Length: 122
View (cartoon, rainbow, N blue to C red):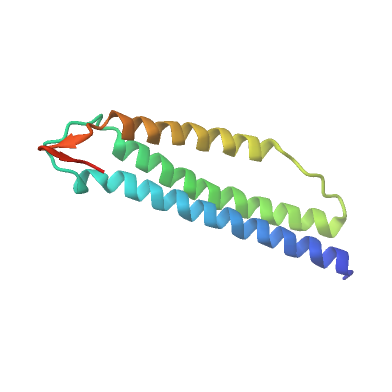
């Protein structure tokens, strides 16, 4: 195996690991947002959609694991066959989904009241 092909495989693996870190972060944020209702006083009114948003973030994290694993192996095969062509389709789709979910997170945070029983809520 040539040194160029080895570098290509190592770059593919680094990319895969970066997607795994992203997936873990999405799942973690999803769990955190879904569990926020247990950290906030029941007297605080809210939208009631935090659990759904958290669940969607966690599901997107799991989907990221599946898609990045599939992508890793397809790129690995393309490198071995010397037929690799970069594709921006998945990057654009993932960016759009994360942007929409980030907008949802901001909506949930902004719609929560800023004070709780006379004290500031962080």
